[in-house]
Each structure stands twice: as C-alpha cells, then as structure tokens.
Amino acid sequence: MRAGTVFLRFSPLQVFESRQKRQGEPVRDVKATEYMFGIGAVVVGIGLYSYYVRELLASLALFTGAFLILGMAALGVFLVWSAAERIAVWAPPASRSMFALSRRLIAAYARS
Image (tube, rainbow, N blue to C red; front, side, top):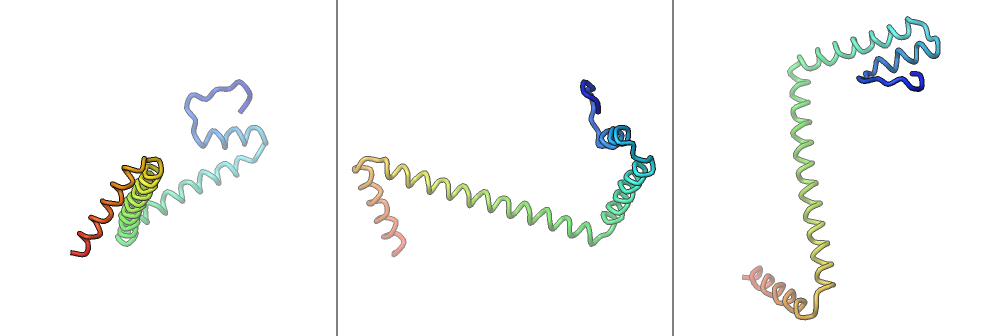
C-alpha cells in the first residue's frame, strides 16, 4: 500500500497483494496462502457436517452463555454490595441506626 492510496473496501487479500507487490514475493507463496484458506474452509465444513462436532459446538455455546450470565450476575451483586457499603459510610447516624434495625429484623426473621 502506497501513501495516499485509499481503499474503500478493505479485504485481507489486499494485504497479501500489497505485500507481494512491495516485497517481490513469488506468486506461489500467495497461492499457497489461498490454498490454505480453502483447505481450512473445507476442514471447517466437514467438521460442521459431523454430528459430534455440532454437538460439542452447541454445548460450548450453551456453557459460554451460562457462565457469562452467571458472571454478570455475580458482578452485579458485587457492585450493588460495594455501593451499599459506600452509602452506609456516607449516610448520617440516623440512617445507620436504620441499617442496624433492618439487620436485626432480618436476623430475627432468619431464626424463626
């Protein structure tokens, strides 16, 4: 790529083409890269055709989603707890006694 050249649509092949033109690489290296992309696509296609590979990918997606949701919930609980602690520190003594009363009520409810 030369200075001042603007590509309206960028593709990964433009990088290989510009590298080939700039450095004088043989054409067979560029074709080898294209063949590797094709072989990779065929391997992925055959893998997706297999039932076991599809089952593993589906379970990976489900567990990734589940752990993401659990992680976000844990982060939310931590942030709410941290904010509540800071509010309790900033609050005047009257509201602190209200916090103490609510803790006693919760403890009494838990015992019964």
